[in-house]
Image (cartoon, rainbow, N blue to C red; front, side, top):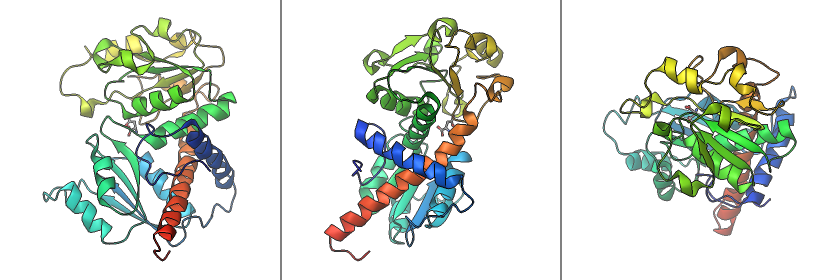
Length: 318
Ligand code: ASP
């Protein structure tokens, strides 16, 4: 296994080999998850704490299920409701949890960089479950696994990422991962939703769906992240759907066997047509959810192996 890191904070520092190892192990967890007996003891005896400082449904459920299937003791903390309201700082919260000896900390936070900061302060493995508009590494890995299984490869594909790129950690992690695997990435969206400095990202940018979708193999739609917008970025949702919402008509520009993806939660009728999202011949959105559990199992399994090895080196009992 090439992946030797202590934490999974982003795609930025992963190599092609790391990504390959994570996806290969994920494949074996997909097989396990399809059996009646879904248990393994890869995390037996370890404690996993899910700290979500920002609302989440699928990511938190996915990490919880992944930990339970691997035999960890899993605890969920919805931190919007408790200590944060009392004014405790992120670091205080982390140090309090650290004193409880967790082995894996899964953290989501509305501020970019908050998870990296926390990882410096605790002595367990930290997984970034999404920090602000920075990174969401397990989402990019589950998207990569979905693509690799649907297309039979994860290189030399034409992939369009469409919509609210500027506010999206999903887009950022995917651009990094798909670039490392030598794919051609196109970004499509209104200029107001494109991040600054896009010229340095090694991607092509379009503000017209028909043009940008031409012959692509994968169409990845993004949610309009209204919670990260502090002004009017689009004239109206109706207008946005007309120009940038994916429907069967616009999809005709893509390759005949192009797949449609969305990280969820979806705004049906805003960035994607509901019927197309449910079309099992084109949409792999449900597959993405399935792959999510397997990828999180693989990531936590590998981090736990690295953690045990590090503790053994340091002479700590495990
Ligand atoms: N669930 C993804 C995230 O947490 C995408 C989204 O919220 O639009 O970033």
